Image (cartoon, rainbow, N blue to C red; front, side):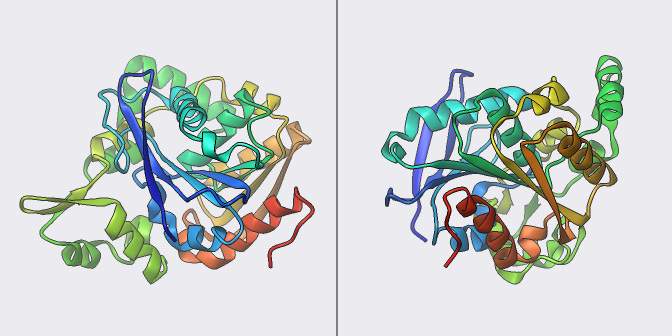
Length: 297
């Protein structure tokens, strides 16, 4: 899979970067990663999807090769900037259908994009998006005022994350089979070690600073459920059997609230697409190609 780097100086004052495939006339698939990762972390799944789609991989603020950009601009602004970059840099893909997909944090950003830009994408697939329930959002709004949000378990865990190793081999030994990476296919772990780490003078470190990951875990999107109610783009949610307890609750609420949203529970954990990349690619391709009256070959 040959990918071409792109960059976009945003209206927020920092540069977003990512990758795209060479335009081939296939439909375009815009993909957004989870918190702490980057687009090319998902290469085992994306390589399968590249048989059917041209790819546009967008790395959010402070992830991959995008600028850290100071303070996190927030979920809603991050979604806006991804759209800004695509519209500014994606002219070579005009004239073909555009689709969207995203995992976790990137799945929520994708939901915000389709809510705010209903004609931008023909359809979207969200991979275990961390859609917070209304009570969680209400609690978060109070916690943000008091500063408690900075100390949520996920934010604390992220701030304490080890971010540097003497080599990629040491990082592999330290991370494989543990925490977030438990159950990942070997090729998915290879992609993470290749693309989510950068070489430094005394070894390698995570491209996404733990402090940025913690900022995201210590914040939530604005107006989430009013925006989710407004979605008119067909959205299909693939949510995992083993994930955060609130995800299935939120998915059920959304499908009941909005007839444009469907859902399927799939085997695996929150990073099921890293555990079973070929299966995940098949689920995504089947759903999106059905919108064109086609089936994966």
